[in-house]
Length: 216
Image (cartoon, rainbow, N blue to C red; front, top):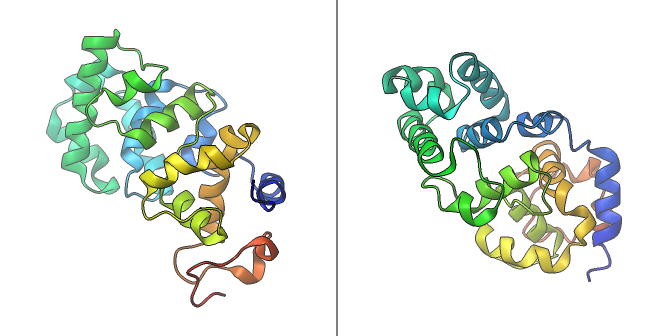
């Protein structure tokens, strides 16, 4: 195991509260699997602040598979417009809701195989539901996680899908449940894609800075 993994994880755990900051993190306090799933689908290519506002607006009107599936598509599109790709997302939300009603009695599955069998639910979304709604020991990997892990020098992968397969081999299981929440916050605030804040990074001494050009 890479000798920097444990000191990095311990340092970041102390700095970032995995139950705060983002919409999905806060949902852990009183998890509703359906809302976690829908908020995750809305968050794709959207700012977290936007996702939180739009999610709350949507749930005032429709917060169950039945209500979302029956909502007029144009009305749903108008509600979620600000999250971007609103036509595709509206279609996905309604297709997912109908599938939950038809195959799972309106309940969001608590296992990976059933979740990814739902059209519109990919590996990352499935693992976020398992981790954030059901407290399962899985590691959701997004662009922040993929970028930072390569930047640290823990892995050498070209895609998030490749990272998804490699990280369970390296990361001690006790960190799995909090990993995504911590690294997403770290990636947004400090280890940003362009010009990361190396000068104020709490784990700078452990980082190999692979691919880092100009930093701050």
